[in-house]
Image (cartoon, rainbow, N blue to C red):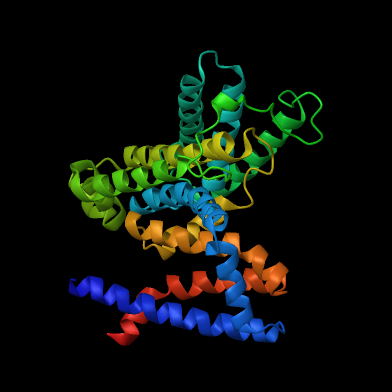
Length: 338
């Protein structure tokens, strides 16, 4: 292992120990034994086949937008809009899945493509504003999140609402238009290996291609990149388009693989949690995968912590927040222990 790798491993261990210690204190304050709390977390997330499958479902839902956020961040742009891009991608997939003709496999491909294109289009709005007017992508993407939520809500409560539906949602997908399940009797589908393949492809692009080097140069040293001939406005549009496409693809996989329709409860905040996942993963695809697994464990195991160990919901949220703080502070820890 290289010196950089050893240093990263050391700081990860220190951060993890700090997280466990502080989370234990939080559970004690909440009146729960940390042993019972962590045992419930393990039981709810990796205690059996169904629990592991659900953890990987949550991992997948977080991995797509986390990779999207990281891609834009590596180019030097703060994409806070993965939530909106994911919603628009899911809406596009839900609509296409009910109207496109042809056999199931073709419809599935069309849904995934529609999700990616929808997310890319939504991301390009922010990229275009940054490129053309120099506007803040943070403000733009935050506002676009709100617009996406309102637009999706209007669509499924109004013209796209399924006949007889009690809540805002599109019609259900035909069975042959849903993603194949990997583990029978669970919600784990081929979306998980697709997400892993995408992470590998992004790693290769960023680390081994000229275009990836240009993107990283634009993020690390924009003035030097501009002097070297890299078109920063064009890079903004490119980065947000690809970032949005990745997030939109994630929304499409939730529709096609988990919900089998689009509804307004598509995301409980995956796009926002994904920002933390990307930062915890140090914006590096392989580590983002590991971070997504960690947050997937927290997401799937939190219900067991509440029901089995009687850990209050607020305490569970605090544990998740502490995970973000502890693991995202690795650079500070590295400086202090150097």
